[in-house]
Image (cartoon, rainbow, N blue to C red; front, side, top):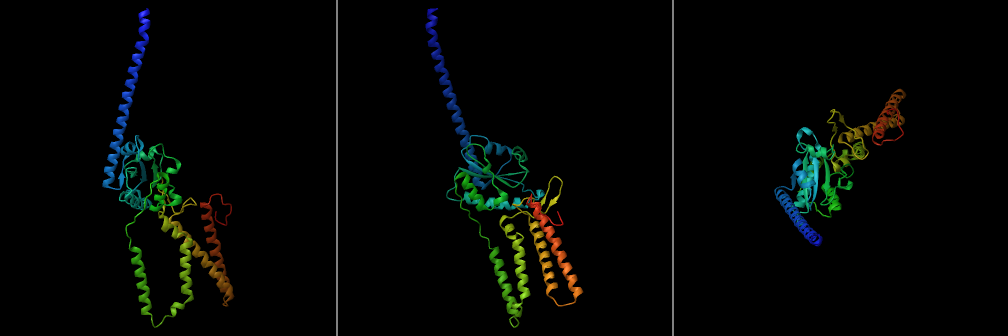
Length: 336
């Protein structure tokens, strides 16, 4: 018993050392395996990126290269629906800006394997949309190299828009990677301006012997009103943000022409606002005409009633649209 008692600590020590060595070997082997797996993933992403600036991914690729560890690179993912049957015009516009940004990064001198641009189309990765509980497109998300995406890693498309410069600023905030956006030359604006100048110059040349129309106050007033209607209806916002013309609900097929949020609008909505403003202005003009003209009293009364009706009805319609967008606004007039 004494011999066995003396040998017991030695056997225990030997066993402990052996277990420690085995754990070290396993740990070293697991670390080596992770390093090899990471190297393969980075190499594969670089190969895809060399072929095209934006890497197309399905569900399997997304889970392996974006979600699953190990990963030491950040990934920007655009979730979209580009197939024609989806009728997502804003998806195509956002994709064009996304391609410009990805190309600017791919062909810049600062390009590295620390950031990749990818895209997941709904028709190629519907399971990814379901996994992320995503029910709208386009959506831009940043998946950091370490940890899970936070709230700020989802780009605020409705508030900021999807211009390449805005996306680049957001990426710089999330990854510290600075991307200088290079846009391909676009001569359409220059050509349009040249055509306009040529048209105006040709008209002035043809009417060079009679230029009294230049001093026509009514004509200039109509031009000024057109500019005011365009600006107050949100045409400049449409030009900057590039919203869709309308929205069709995929569930019931219902088409919405008025956006439900005060932070966004549809192109059709700006056209409706333009027509409403024009109708109210026409009513005000008729009221002024009825008050200042010196014609028949009965005719002036009819003009006054028509002008008043235009102002009251279309202003009520305009106010009801305002109420539908600014939820909680307490006031209404005729139309709720």
